[in-house]
Length: 452
Image (tube, rainbow, N blue to C red; front, side, top):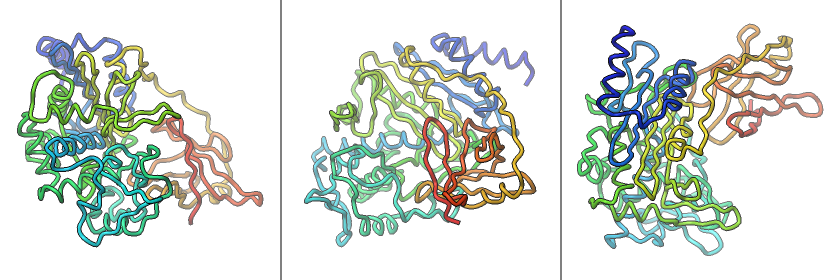
């Protein structure tokens, strides 16, 4: 496309969608993120005063991709969780289920469910991440690291439930659990006799005119798919079936604005009361000043209701303001967060992350014999490891379900990545043996033991 054609396309977008609502600061920030290589493409959908506005920049694929737009299809990841909790709320309001029902009520006979101190896990516990169940089950062993949820089905769910011993009290504290919300989606399937995808289509896609929202790709959705990317390389889509309620949905910015409009608006709709129930505070921890609805999180002292998501090559954000119906969806086909864009559009006091290029770090020389001691596999979680390999005098790091990337020494034991702002530090025992690795990224520093 010529520069003139591209400018003409932008002019048409301005004329048609009035994207002056999306500030020049935000537009420039998005362009910088894409132009610097941080993101392949970004799509923003903005709803304010009843007017839909879109701004898109970048491509559906780094190689031979087309321009992204409001109809481009993305994996929305964990935003699926609020679809799941709305389905639950609908059943609660109809008297078909109750929030304090034990989950054992909806499981097949003979399935063991963990208990603790005389308390049982309820549907509400799953919907508020307070069940005591872990983020991921310890029997999650991907057959295909590039599509890690494939093959994890009801049999594995029941196996884990029957063997797991809770390490914290039920209903006492928040611990984000993909397994717990995936289990809730499975219970809704068992209760209704329908698949999770059929429930999504019947309750959301059809009544809200969201034709591109589902799990399976239609031929039309496949044609408009924004390919996922991780650290500059194209990666596989994730097929989440057994734990679909945790993150299986695909959608477009256009469809998601309809979903958010139904959540944020005053109008009547088939699920309006169920949506409103999910927005209310369902769990509160006074000590940590933490509150959560049924699935939904809060920001800016509760004035913003939001959820985000991420799969192998995608990040997503959806949120709205309670008091005025303003809503935002942000999709990127890259494993790099863009939550700050959504939060800033909902409240400009929330700062945008700088999109300036990262300053190049100096590389130091490390002896090949020392590099060799770092080679191995480091387990940061039961389902997440980083494998360090060496080719000639270059070390490479490959995380679970991600491509392999070179890492560069800034000190003898500290190595950085060029594709993302992160570094790894190799830790040694008193005798000098390399025993673990620390990953420093996004303000967090998980440590992984060297297992081989």
